[in-house]
Length: 350
Ligand code: AHM
Ligand code: MG
Image 1: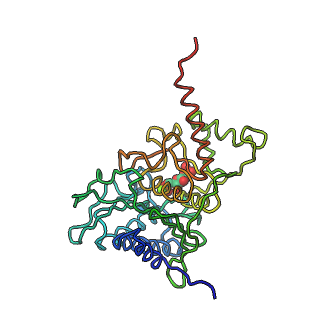
Image 2 (image 1 turned 90 degrees about the vertical axis):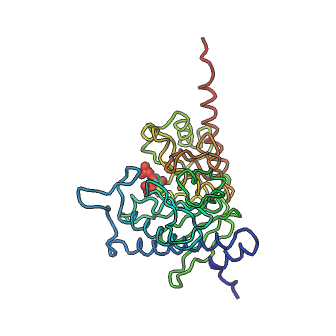
Image 3 (image 1 turned 45 degrees about the vertical axis):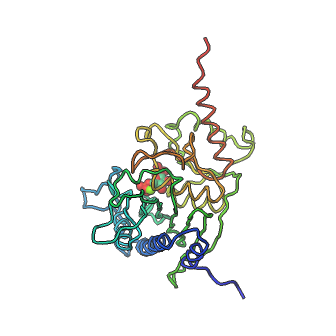
């Protein structure tokens, strides 16, 4: 007889019994997972659901705090997550890519001990072309004594996360989760409506021959990134001594899911276009939750100059350069930055 399937509910109850999470965190994760199922249904309807295209009216696009035009599904996914998480009593406040500021839980509901941050629909430029998109989330503790959290209460480094995960809406819908004891993947059984554990303890191979980057930005990169990718492209004949393959979905969730599954390095480095903002991807609800998952799977995550999870955030929507994935490859990318910076710091020879 095949072993019984382990649902997300059972997995979380077992984590609670093992003393790794409390009942309130378990229920919080269940609520997020339920919201993701609702988003999955909306994404899956595509054109039939009337959910494709931009939010707002023609000639008057809806723009979020990032200055980006919102898609209808960005707005809908944000509303689904807000509504699902408002009343459960586990959260003190929420913050989202789609909202200028964090929101405390409304006074009519009890407030709990956690803060939730999310990117409701990551990779939204891919919605209208039927390519995988996803939801990313991060859970922090509400600081002691705070009952009405403000933006400042969310500004905790990635090491303070108590849970993180993403849901990918692809050929199958999958939830990948960590509560600090490994990264685990669940696949949605659409008939039953339940997430089923399909990989316990994901492991990212330490070595890789695959990189993910938007190569069209090459001429805007910093010198160490130019040097690093230049050497990857030289393949067997170059200093790295092996041929590399390249993949770029342009949905971080899909790219990171591939890396958690078969290894690789994902990077969205600093470039001269995004430098004034500090990078392209957001620290609090993109880089940090993904870095927590990747480290839990034996990989590494860095800004190129600092471990990602150690970055002390200065703003809710702060952006950072991102390198994450197979440990030795992330270390190689970091080495190019360190060597470049050390050379730049040397006094010029007369
Ligand atoms: P979004 O959260 O507005 O969708 O933007 C983030 C996305 C990531 O999913 C992806 O890695 C990156 O932006 C793609 O950027 P580009 O289109 O510059 O390649
Ligand atoms: Mg995003």
